[in-house]
Length: 295
Length: 299
Image (cartoon, rainbow over all chains, first blue to last red):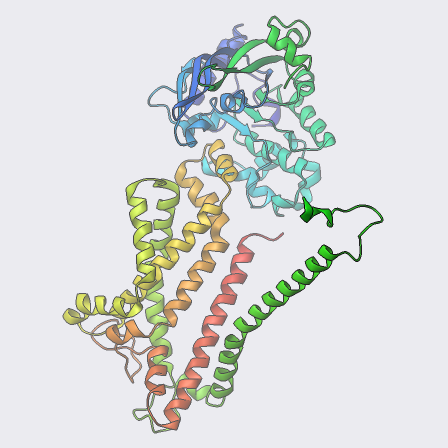
């Protein structure tokens, strides 16, 4: 399987065949029949509790395929909580409870019997701080394929993934060196390479550039534009300019405060085309936020 | 208010010679001196032990000492502690084979599975208690539980050493596992790794250098134990590799026997035996450090 035939060609079969891949494949065939706008994710009345306190309330939105969807909002409004729902990473936090539905190609990822491990093989994630394993560059990229029992040409997979993450030329001579020797920006691109090496369908990015300098940030943003040809990308960002630059659609989250108990939780205020959100916001709160009046 | 009046830094005033500054400098010097003194005092016994053992042991330490067993009389010169060396190797080896995997798995359970449940708390509590139990009690326990029925032997000695090693390994491994950043675990889970894969491929390798240091500490402690072995392996003049049915010697038992008799030849052998044990433990520790730093991959 060559890079050219990867997900751009909707009918191509994916590597790493797992139960959910069948769902993805079925949906791909529907895309080719002209139902291209079927959402990757349909979020329905999603709420998240940590213990007894509520963190996110009643989010409903559709994420469209091969687009970059940005999630913006002030600190503590539940952006990270929301993005971690898409690959069930919230479950790793003790006491976290998710209610509502997230339909991934029509299948609820929170339904009983769905294995979160399988979900995460389809939905990759890049974190705020670059977190390469303390292993070699090569082993970092090969990690996901190894644990999934990949039997193909590992060297080729590593090279292809690093090329797609625009890192190959910088590291090709030192694949056996520790990943921790790379610069922050390189480490983050390595994490992206590591995520795409398992051939996911969606890539979640939780403030992927917030720990990077402006040049490294630009490289990551350019890379995202490349990657959206093949993947659906959801990005949480603190930086409104970044959201405006890179995303096709934007979701604005906001913190609601209970006047009596002073409990706080996040709600989805507005979701739509990025241009519309930034130029003609429908909600007053969105307008205040994108015009820099708070946050 | 008054306290700060003199110490306020105003350009051109009081940068060199004012009272609070002098007091601060003096305190700083005094505390530095105290710390250095403490370091020096701590080092004195260590250096004295190393010097004494080396100076007194080196004379008897020769090829014959390393390759032959004890003579049947303390009075006789020559011979060596090969029987003790082999005994220590067998018993510490067996004890390690039991306690290292068990201890690491128990720590993995405490940290990764049983965060707050009662079983994890129980294991941790008893590890603490066990770590504080005098080793002679461990010997007595194995004596009543095994030796009375099956007799003295290497297996019984190894059992007592394993009981001593276990809590050290559990607690040190637990501390190391706790230090693995959760970002690494997140990264692994986000790539679709199952919990066990994350433990085997990310958490344990990341903690390996620290774990091996703790393990070596436990091995060193076991190699240096005497009291429990008196009650379980008993000690012997003969070189033996029998795991049960016959008493076995160890370096520590041989040193103990040699040191408490009045004959010069026996005491000389005990000094050499002490030097031998010291070198073995030292080599083990250094090798463990080197292996651990290598496994962290070349930087």
